[in-house]
Structures are given as structure tokens and as C-alpha cells.
Image 1 (cartoon, helix red, strand yellow):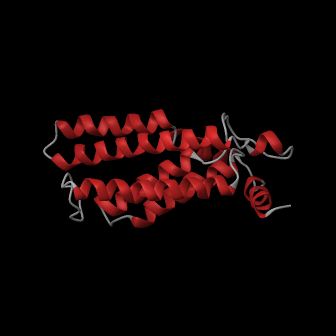
Image 2 (image 1 turned 180 degrees about the vertical axis):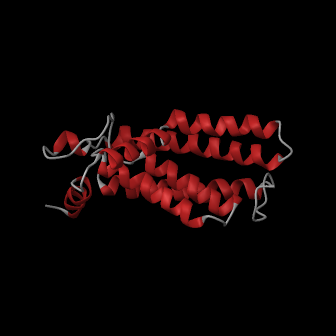
Length: 183
């Protein structure tokens, strides 16, 4: 048995209870592409009518970065076409529903992008929250039986690189400058 499958079993076969399963489903729900982009669009609209001009700019950067990440992940999923663990492993414990290919994980890419962007461009405060969110966003996808750990790591790499690239481009073109807070 390879390490990826062994680690999948170790995480996926952790005790499952009502609270942990519902928390995993909720975190997965928040990481869906339409929900993530919808949240960013809401912030853009709020930012347009706010005294905080950087709010809508950051929201725009997050929406554009998220959409770009979604495109990259979708192309890689079609190209690599790795089956999901529950399609291959008969003992995978499944919590919820997922479709499509397994590698890389969109959810882990989204959460890593969001965490990375927030840490690089918006605020250094709450770094444990952002790093924890990225970790949990990927962890629950293995716990739910939807991804192998290597799918999660692949998503984290894509998200982190995209966060750096988005922050670099927005700073380079003087759209946003990091000053330690959002105001």
C-alpha cells in the first residue's frame, strides 16, 4: 500500500459523528466555487458603497484569483482525470456528495489561496485562523472520502502560488499596497 492510500485511510477512518460530519459538510459547502465567488461578489458590492475603497479592490482580487484558480484546477482535473478514492477504494467512508475528478482539490486550492492572499496582502493578524482554515479546508475533503492527501497538497500548492502571484500583480501595478490592514 502506498503512503497516499495509507494516509487516506488514516484520516478517512477517523471516528465519524454527527457533529464532525456536519462540520465537514459545512466547510465543504463554503468552499464550493459558486459560493466562494458569490461571497467575493457580495464584498465587492459592499465595498463599492463603503468608505473603505480597498475593500472592493481586495474583493475583486480575491474573486479574480478564485476564478483563475477554479479554471486551473478544472483544466488539471480534466487532463489528469484521477478517480476519487470512493470510486476506487471499497472501504472509503463517504460523507456527502462529490463529482468529477480528484486531482487537484479545488477546495484546498481555494482555501490556500484565500489564506495566502489574506496573509500577504490584507492582514498579518489572525494568521493561525487563516492557516488553520486552509488546513481544515483540505483535511475535511479527505475525511469525507472525496480526495487523497496528494490531491490536497496539489491544491495547496496551486492556491499558495496563485495567492503570491495575485498579491504580486496587484502590488506591482499599484492597485493595492500592503499596509497591514484593510482600511
